[in-house]
Length: 478
Image (cartoon, rainbow, N blue to C red):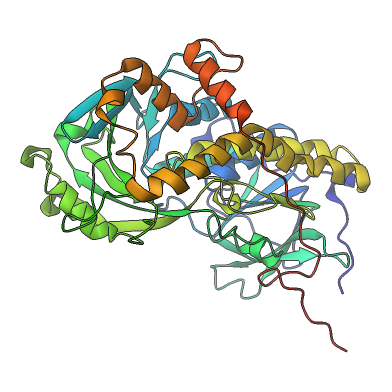
């Protein structure tokens, strides 16, 4: 077996040149040549979505030599609603992203539609979060974040797909083997580091290789979206959510909701997300989308002739559905760790926040020499994520099982709630996790107290080394 690679924390960090302007950051076109013997860093981040780019940015800002691997080449499409809540905007501000530049569309709040009821809910003015949201196409959004990470000093390798983790004799992850989409590099190349952050999305290839399986008790939602040319709706000030959708042919209530998000460029992002129904299983999202849009006014333009591109769909792993979030040198962030909110299907804010926490953990761990103290710091990552979201997600998973998967948001958005500004504000903050700590008002106090009463989920131990392939120990030769 290959010997342990040298610990890059004991060598000179080979930083990429820093650039002040993310739009002119070096390396994003993957022009550098990769050594056939591999590349070393202090941290390798796999996946340059919001989670991976956030982690790489914060690591680079902390002076850590970080490699960021991305299997696609930017710009590239992603299935997403493109709507960002104040929690996500907060993370963009922490990264120093210029959200006043052209292309960002601000939202004042949400418009909820349930039957004949339509209500507007402004984003709350809190101490921790801004009082506005944003919209931005993932085609541009991910590219901006990756370039921002490069500008901070991260080394981005586009067109490199991580195939498998590299491990030492003890089963500890020491990097990844990745293959290039270039015919000039026919064989996989090793990217070595003492810490690896997996931000490789819902496929969770690296996590599965270590036997980190998805919790079958946790729900997986599905989302579908499409762009439409709609100048009338494109400059709306509210993110519109429809909670009264049904299965095709007047079936049961959809266990989810539809959205119409303004993009500010003459287009809207229209889609829906749903859990599997407890009795009726998965809905045909394409048919449900067509049935819903037929109800919308003709002047909105949400018709086939105004569509741009096909309907695209993706899975949404909810509520910490993969455990543990750290094992043997590998940290899971974003969809890889099942971090999409079970309350509303939001994932970008959670991915970016987890990326920052993972980066801080890795930077602190690397300040210690290889050994028990470093490992102790790394094991603090799932503890911190559980502290932040454990109770909130546990309550959300329960709501998804008992309410949302049976009848969607209809029981919650009844006429009493829709007619009460206080209840609407409280529900909006609950669904989007927008509360101040310590509490600033009665709603904060009620919600924070409710979360404290929920028992914290127990942390699960990591599987034993060699327990890949679905967690089953590999057979050893006699």
